[in-house]
Length: 433
Ligand SMILES: Cc1cc2nc3c(=O)[nH]c(=O)nc-3n(C[C@H](O)[C@H](O)[C@H](O)COP(=O)(O)OP(=O)(O)OC[C@H]3O[C@@H](n4cnc5c(N)ncnc54)[C@H](O)[C@@H]3O)c2cc1C
Image (cartoon, rainbow, N blue to C red; front, top):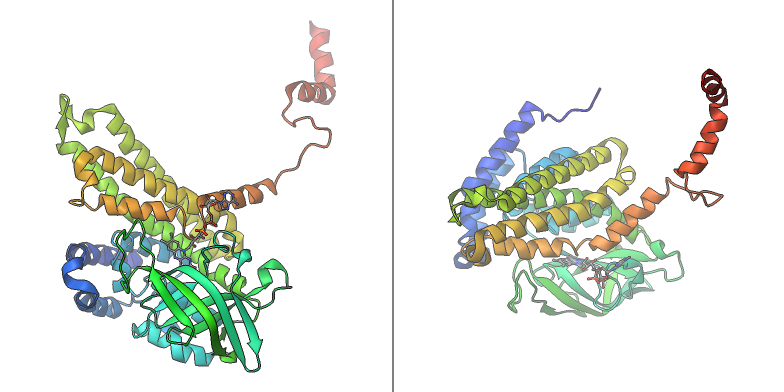
């Protein structure tokens, strides 16, 4: 009977260690980000990274031959729940997006030469990468609308297109670019991935787009989202990553596990906001009692606890299904958690802000930053509506419309059928009367 909610003791010890390290050595660094800058942050994280490697937890998402642990999604999910509590914790554990996902793509589809040139330096932290798929005027939530083209020219490919929201694009050494190579193929077989060095002539990083998360214009900052024009970008045939036309297939392999990690990281954030909500309710006094004695606040606490528990179980179940039955078997579960988890994060952070009043709105607490982060979760990696639609389509495959147009639960019709089924019983009961 393999339904089991426990964690192996040895792995639980790893999680406990992570929890301690993240809270005592990484959370404090969050408050110094402006003073430290990117270089200073890297120096601050270096000793933690050393300990993480010694503990065997560095880049745990990768297979052992690449220095990872080859952990399944359940274990990775539990790790990401801890790492999610801080935006900088994944950097200390070698699994910060987008480098982590890009390293998975390279591990999955890269040739030995591509791994040598891009993957190993990426894992060593010597290179930075970006994933360049979304386009400002076409392909976003519907990636089959990609306009960026890669055309074969002898031994080379020439790429032309316009992208934006390529996270870390302005500090990346190389970009993984999705471009249409086979415009006449079926929609999901038209695009391919290319490894493009950021200094290739024709790659123009136009700007970093200011966002809700970083509302002030800046350039070349870690975590920014770049707008990029690719004009006549000529790359060798060996820049093709994976098979021609396999771009979407490879992207899927990366995105599905990535969604488990997102959802578990969101739960880490939600938990931190929830802890603040509970703490606040116990010390803030208004209208005759602490907030904890007002029923609305009690409802916030109870609803948040229930929703986080539901999201956590749903996510770990999706991870378990992926581990036991494979990525494709877990598609519906992953769609569910993507929109449900994002909503739970949003709602828990929102309630925590409300309970803190002006303090919650201020930058004296991390809640306002969490709120901006939470808002993006409902858009990136496919907006809520697309995942809802996809889940609904999959659910509906298990149903069919009644041929006669009468609902299968229609009581008069069922009563009629039951009269036939139980005619003998009805006769016997009537005869007794
Ligand atoms: C913080 C952040 C980081 C990102 N990082 C990257 C990155 O590194 N690389 C990259 O390539 N992209 C990245 N993106 C882009 C992201 O993948 C897209 O924003 C996302 O896929 C949605 O596409 P879009 O913005 O073009 O929205 P659109 O496609 O224009 O959709 C707009 C809205 O239309 C509605 N909609 C769309 N389809 C449907 C439907 N079927 N039914 C009902 N409503 C629908 C939804 O409400 C949706 O939000 C990032 C985005 C954000 C916010």
